Length: 150
Image 1: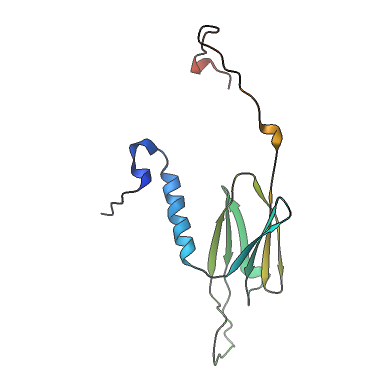
Image 2 (image 1 turned 30 degrees about the vertical axis):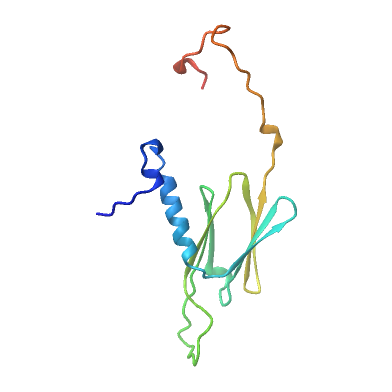
């Protein structure tokens, strides 16, 4: 039986098991450095993730986004005709995962000369801020939770 003592095993963190799984997956993702990648800032609100994918074709790559998790997968079909004297270019499948912050959107991807560029943009919307009025218990009767508008 695998008992681990983690921050999320505390009773104060009931229902946060998905965060523990996310932290576990992030730590495992950092163990594999293939394929190499860069993350660069483009302007004030843009980012670009660039992966070096020598030997891959556009058809070998899949990009998906689910719950702020950007996943890039690659799988090459082996060339059965090739006879290698030395093979230094990796030809293996990979899965690379990036967790995006809230408000970061994927704007598109380009594949050029063995480099995959994934363009991201941070949405800034200062219109979401508002001031919440605080009532005193004496000035107003507190609403019941079941009577609050949905």
